[in-house]
Amino acid sequence: MLVAALCLTVVADPGRAAPATCSPTVPTRGARPGPVPAADGFNYGSAGLRVHLGWPNGRLAAGILPDGGSMATVAEDGSIHAKLGWWRGVPGRLTLTGRRLDAAAPRLTAHVPSGYGRRGFQPTGLVFPTVGCWRVEGRVGEARLTFVVKVTKLRWY
Image 1 (cartoon, rainbow, N blue to C red):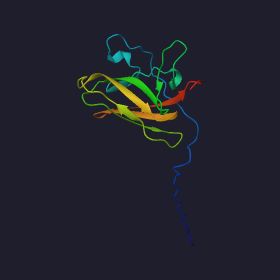
Image 2: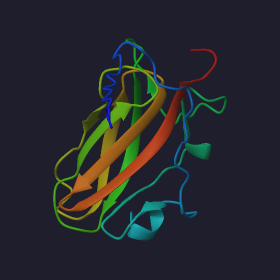
Image 3: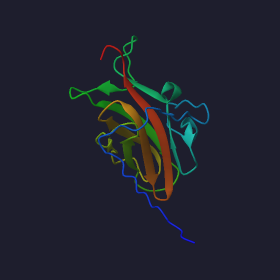
């Protein structure tokens, strides 16, 4: 009896876009940040690391809203800049990484300012180089939190 084995290796084409579906993360509970940041004002995560996802249905629309406010701004180079608040339930420095899921793009960059202590509130700035479906991961020590956000620009941008 002759048995043949076939081994197939599939290599993704880095220039080719992944499927266009995006399943953004929706907060696990309702919460609004108060005037003084506290853990219960952050609506997604665990006791170790939480974030406040204030974007409707996991969609971050960049640009000036009709009321003059914004959730994110569009820079001259087309990148999208957003501020995001985190809560560190464990001590340590917050690190952030992110990558686009639906197409090739440069990685997300993040600004995590110092001076906020080793636990508690931590503001950050995220820079998405392009619109699209993005996965963002935050880490403090062994605590890890990942969410997906659909980044768009308002129609007039």
